[in-house]
Amino acid sequence: MDMEFSRAGPSDLATIAAFDEQAGDPGRRTWLEDSLRRREVHLLSVDGAACAYGVLEDFFGHAFVSLLYVAPARRRQGLGAGLLAHLCGVAATPKVFSSTNLSNAPMHALFARQGWTVSGLLTHLDDGDPEVVYVRVPR
Ligand SMILES: CC(C)(COP(=O)(O)OP(=O)(O)OC[C@H]1O[C@@H](n2cnc3c(N)ncnc32)[C@H](O)[C@@H]1OP(=O)(O)O)[C@@H](O)C(=O)NCCC(=O)NCCS
Image (cartoon, rainbow, N blue to C red; front, side, top):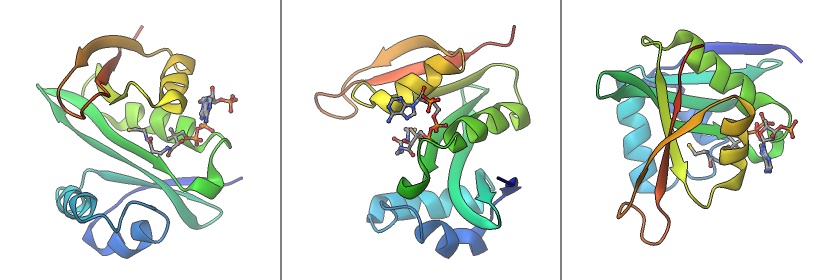
């Protein structure tokens, strides 16, 4: 499996929309367009086909992974883990933060697997499903 990482730009919108099931959602679309414009999106291609992306932005002066997304057909093949490790490698700060809903069991498992620790809990974002904030502190 040949994994290739690249920094995405506005011209990659259609490529991402082709595998992101939520790209049709207007809120997601606008956020993605803004993130692409700010050059915060990192694309993962496998054997030449784009199938995952991650967004790396600023959070109180630290790097923050605000989204990790793997095409449904490509999940449980190590791509999310590879992309998250790549984002930590290119992050501009040693400490990297991220977050996910309390209900997102796959993402909690991935954070645990890669040695992330819980930093805090944010309530009142999504009703009834708090946001768990994680941090990866370099050893
Ligand atoms: C969460 C997500 C990024 C994981 O990507 P992935 O490529 O499937 O993850 P990987 O194959 O790299 O998994 C690495 C490890 O994470 C854990 N994991 C991942 N998915 C899991 C699942 N569905 N159930 C349990 N553990 C899971 C496992 O420990 C796994 O290792 P293993 O397969 O050897 O057991 C993917 O499910 C996804 O895109 N979900 C939708 C978007 C989302 O919710 N993003 C997170 C919020 S920012």
